[in-house]
Image (cartoon, rainbow, N blue to C red; front, side, top):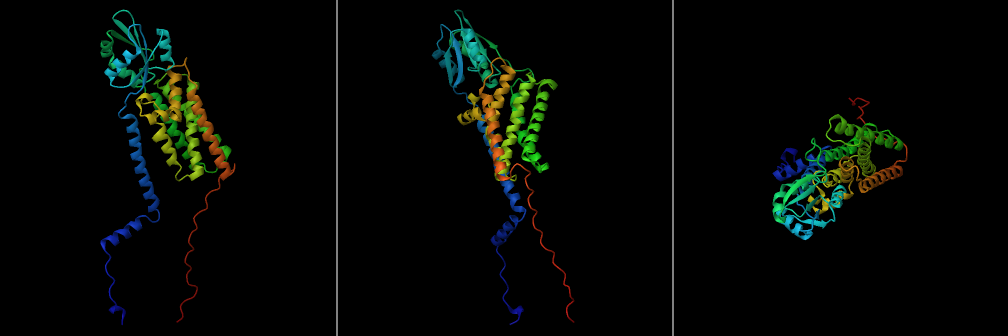
Length: 368
């Protein structure tokens, strides 16, 4: 039987054609492009979710405030202010105005109510400690005065800079240091791939120092958004830049440069930055973010910058210890991982993909 008499192959169904098209779409360079698109979409959703959970609906909880009074007890103030604000507060009594003001200076409390024998009272707040909480208490001062039977005068002991009425500049500084930290590390590894371990560390430190100086001068002396001591702020920001770069560099060695940005992004953008307390005071964040912000590098950077800018006479050691811990841990992890995998020298370039041999032309003509 001739070939023309053989039965024709049945036409493929739409489902089969669709499956074939899908297989072609995930072969060759299409496959990693698809994976990247799916991951980017997932992280976009996680980004929106994380920041919305942390900051879209701030709810005050366990906000510490103080009272100095012979006529109003801490329990009465707590009940009165919770009825006004609809939120939870923790009220402590202080023996004198000076002690209460010192507690505000130390950022142990956000406000203090001081009542006397007359019909007037003083409410001391600190916008620099948490602008959102200070505005919350200030807005309801009149109604709070009615609850305690006094006319309240509000005094801001630590007002924000006129150039930063919302108290966000320090958060933006920490955010810039974080993002530029790991983006700079990425670009250095891509464009200067032949560096030794010592060269990588040297350029990471030099880049961190330069970036820290530039954003410090830009925010301070050049545009005057904040007034702070240049050298200490420069040091804090440089440390933050270096930490973010070291974290990325560690992941680049451990899982490769193709996916190293994923865990770095998750750590800093999804967890560390929204939990920092820079945009919203810690007592307004959900418990998870409030806890994480205390131990994440961005939160430590924000607290150190706040101390240096608004509370220079009342520094706290904790943010420096946290930031220093991250610096030592991230750098040590990177150095150890790179030394084990590649040694201290240059990282060998990946071998080029083998090219297929060209098809050789026939050396002899077909026989006649």
